[in-house]
Structure formats: structure tokens, C-alpha cells
Image (cartoon, rainbow, N blue to C red; front, side, top):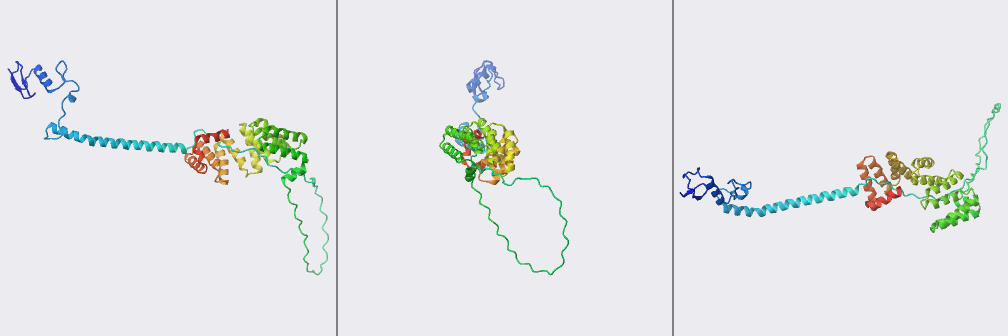
Length: 371
């Protein structure tokens, strides 16, 4: 018979119902759950999403479910605004991290850069060696003569101020051009000047022919060998230039320009140990040659001897604090030594002096020159 079920809030039509709230049959319970909107399987059991199928109970005590639902809907815009604010803050934080990372990446040197080498071949007129007219002879000591007997004591006569002979001023040192003209025939000097003008015009082939004519005419003309070698070096043909440099150095061993050009040529051929042998002799004769320090620093860097490399670059930076390339090379050397703070400091100083160093392409072009 039909009875009202207080548990499921329906009228029970089960003929087997005994009238007790806890004794409903499975079929009656299933019908009741279906009436309440609960999803059931074929056995009358609730599915896994039963909690989603049922209406959520009110969080507000004492309010009907409809009013509580309205209150939750009113709270949703506030939750959405709070979520949006959090998302904006996270996005801003990520943007700041990306900007800081980009700045740090730009401020640090490249991972595998090369030191900047910006030296050129020297072609400065030098004075020729004028031999001393007095020959050097071995001095053989001779026995000293016996001292004379003491003279009788006589009254002293006040000495008169003897007139000192006037010092004859030394003749002024002749200029390099005057010495060159005196040491070599004028026709040879004229050939050299013609070759120099052709080099300035960019005509290296014809200048090379003029210099070759000068050394064939005057085999002792060491400046002609230097200039002839320079025409090859200016075209990057350093292996062909080296023999002519050495011929000139054999004629003028005191020539710092020729020794420098030999060291530079060896560096360009990646013969770093041979280069350092020439640079050591060059610095022994002239410790203030900053270009020689630069070549030494690059050669040591290429050999992986970064401490010696940094020493030579530091000498240049101490002498000229406005030398951006010295600061840049120091940053590379200290970076290889693992001293990142000093490396970054010198790189910032280099960028301050030469802002183009911020460009990776510009730094790579310097590395190509150093190679």
C-alpha cells in the first residue's frame, strides 16, 4: 500500500513496504534516488560523480539553499578579481626576471671570444747606424812610473781662478730623413718615397715592385726590405712577408720596427711561441712598447696562459686607463681565470669607453681580428 517516505520525501508505492523508514526495498530506494536526481548504475548504486550530481549544501547556516547559492554567486566576481590580480603579479614578476637576465647576459662577455688585436705593421723611418770612427782596441795595462821625490816646501801662493774652457755644444742629432739620405744614395731614397706614395693610394702591387727595385739596387737598404714585406702583410700574406722582415733585421739588428713586424707576422701565423721569443727581446730593449705588450698578451691568451696574458693587458690599462680594448681584453683574461666579478667590472668599463662593445657582432669582429 502507498505510504509517505520521510527519508526520501516521496510517496512509496511498494506493495512490500512494511511501513518502517529503514525497511524500504532496493527498488523503492532506487526510485527515490532517481526522483531526487541522483545518477545510479543498473544495480541502483550511485555513480562516482554523485557528489557533483547532488546539490551542494549551503555553507551559510540557517539560510535556505537558494539564498546560499545566490550568496556564492555574488562572491564569485570577488574571487575572479583576486585570481586576476594574482595572475597579473605573477606575469610582472616573470617579466622583471626576463629583463634582468637579458641585462646580465649582455653585460657578460661571450662564452668563447677572442682578444682584440688592433695593431698594424710599423713603417716609420729609422736612423741608419753610423759607426763610431774611433776603433775599439784592447787596452794593455802598463806599469805605473815611480812617484817623484817630494819637492821642497815653499810658501804657498794663493791660486788664481783658472778660466775653464767653454764646453762646446754637441751638434744637433740629424733627423731620420737626413741620416737616411746620407747613408743611402738619393736615388734609393726617392724610390722608397715613391713606393710610400703608392701605398697611401692603395696600389700595393706597384709599390711592391718599386720597393723590390730599391733592394735590388742597394742590397743593404734594410728599410726597403721592411716596406716590401709590409705590402705582403697588408694583404694578409704574412708567411711571404716574414722572410723579407728577417732580411731587413739581419742588416739592422737594432731596428725595433723590424723586430716588432716579425713578432706581429708570427702571431698572425699562429706561431705563438716563436712570437713570444721576439716580443721578449723587443720588450727587453723597450719595456714601454705598449703594442709589444698587446701582442704578448694575445699570444699568451692563445696558449692558454691567462695569468701572463692578464699581466700584459694590465700594463696597457695602467698606462692608458681610457684604452677600451685593454679593458675588454682584461675582461676576457679574468673570465678565463674564473674571476667573474673582475671580468664583469672590466667589461662594464670597456662598454663605457666604447659603447659598440655591447653588440655581439662587433665583439665577434674583434675576435676575428685577434685570430
